[in-house]
Image (cartoon, rainbow, N blue to C red; front, side, top):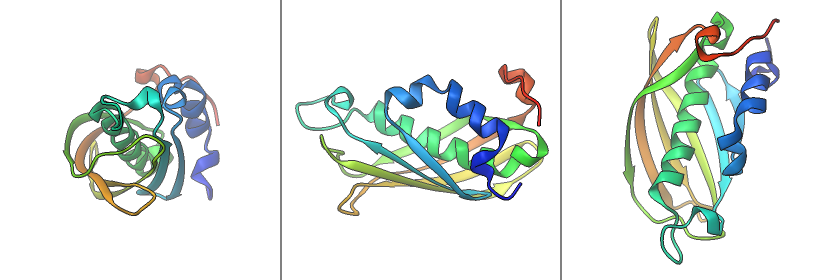
Length: 148
């Protein structure tokens, strides 16, 4: 499929991802193994009067790297789940920031996919960086029922 953003599994993921909607995350698969995500920082993301909770930043990073890994196995009729995530918080994300996250696949094996990601704010300041390992498996094991 030329545009992976239109793949039935991606569309089903978008439809079922209530958590992503809650945090107002949005993404685009640039190419297999390369993804761009965005998330605005609102008051509901804050842990202090001005700065976002690390969990919100981690959620954006996990989602970005997860869809990145997914983009490499979706044509094999597989989905992914996170099995390891290491994140470093570099700068705070402030209320009203627009965060941009990018991820790319470092290495893809038969079942394991290694990904790296970075999150920047609209001033191009590095907010966080991470590496993650993802497991690829059948969509049915994740509860996805679909047909191409």
